[in-house]
Amino acid sequence: MIIAIDGPAGSGKSTIAKLVALELGFEYLDTGAMYRMVTLRLVNKKISLEDIRSIEKELKNMKIDILNNRFFLNNVDVTDEIRTPIVSENVSKVAKIKEIRYKMVELQREISKSKNTILDGRDIGTVVFPNADLKVFLVASSEERANRRVKEFLSKGIDTDFQTVLAEIIKRDEMDSTRKESPLIQAEDAVLIDTSFMTIEEVSREIINLVNKRI
Ligand code: DC
Image (tube, rainbow, N blue to C red; front, side, top):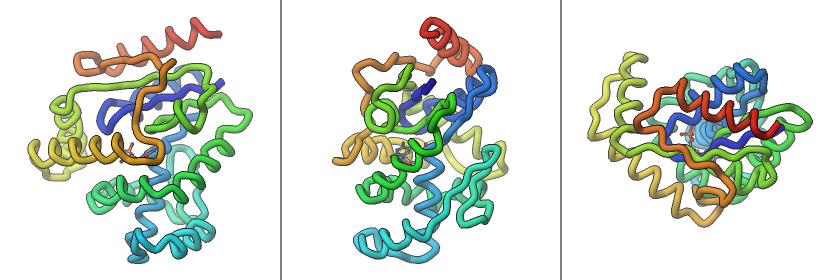
């Protein structure tokens, strides 16, 4: 069984997907982390996003492994590094590149093969698994999403302010929704859940109820 969770940054996708996976005994795949790993590699190697030949070469030499929700790039644990501002600022530009998307989608299908998996991202229900057993599209107001991000940063000891985070979220939404390749849109058959005024537990419960109806 495949469960696809899509939605904009900060809508609660990864927190909720992790919880639902735990409750149902499913594997969880954070596809945003995969785009973040590619971004980290390209930034570290100072590769221009216009240089598609070099990007393709890098993609061939990149080994992505995910073990117990830790992310390994060529055997190095980069779980914390992929959440740093430099990666967040560049990831939307990287995720626009079609050669990168093809490779990531191929990998996502391969990783989820013959396993009950819940995946979160932007194009899971539209491109990666158009035949997913359940598709959920999570949304929340920009202000609420910025609030959640600020809290998350603070809990990690990262100092930030609301306006900066809000501006970054709005910019990222705009880039993710207007790009040519696999833009962020709700699949026709996805269930829309607005999480603005819901707790994590309430959203998870609603998704688990939807899964139970489909079994
Ligand atoms: O979910 P996240 O914030 O970690 O995602 C990082 C970026 O990757 C985000 O700007 C959109 C992009 N992304 C994508 O284009 N397709 C996916 N399936 C997942 C993420």
